[in-house]
Length: 404
Image 1: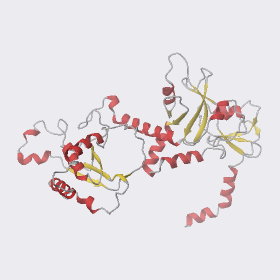
Image 2: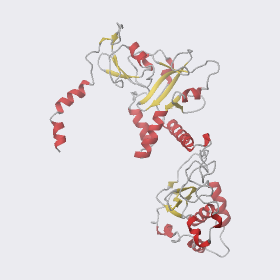
Image 3: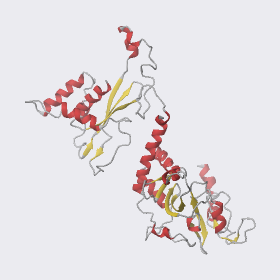
Image 4: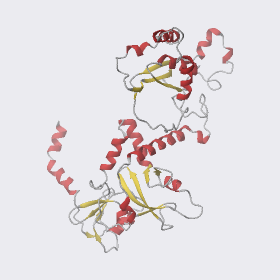
């Protein structure tokens, strides 16, 4: 196109400009800080001005920018270096002002890579807990004991948006962060800096295997964000929602004491359709869960507070009504009984399971999901269940009676 051709005409000029970013004619030279007589050999490309400075002035200028990468001239090229390797120390609890000298070696993962940080907690009387100090500095801990890794809240919020928009896996997201970090391929640790670090604990820190910590932190942070937005902490009451629910119900559907008249129960029979609620059940056999090794001790963070019905509420119903075959009945007889029972409720009899390709449900733990929606296309809270091919109809009936 004509736009591409205009760029092609300037390729040489643009290439020279790109190459100019790899060097700085003022380095080595005089530090740009007023009254400083030290030699300038540091620049920060995250800072807009990119002013050449000495190591000491660069550290002082990043007091409130702890996660920038410095580029230090080693005589041959600019070397990407952590601020901590240049002597930067991050103090918590006093707005960045020092209050003690009890350093801790830390790994902090930010949107521009994985950083080593020399971190000092506040140990003054009346101080907050270590976790609260990190949180109020916008860093989410990867554990609650012996904390050595934290993720910035900015990173976790970026991942939330990234996943919702691109559906990129967490593993790919963490791999990108690793590639943004200068890591020695042989040791798996940060490359040795031309600036000698006085913090010996850094030698023990490795950037390997941050994926599991990230998954845990991202999961907990997303749940807490959902709880914050739902409003129970502030006593927010939403009509048609129980106190423990975190979802937003359909506010257009009829809800007593909210959008129905006080005498709605006395409505004449020929007008009762005005206050009816129309529900639709639909299954999705593409949302499957393969049989794989899982953590048996894993816990649900919002059990009974979201869209899915807890499995312990569904299984007793299946055991009671459908896991025991009637005397003299075959599996096909029981299956047909279920179809006849549901046909009075569902217009199609939910025979879609029989129309699926043979072998589609091989090696799956969950063959799909079933959800209820209202006629305003709003998913009902606590109205979604996992499906198994042999128990589809029973789960439909459970959902129907549960909704009733």
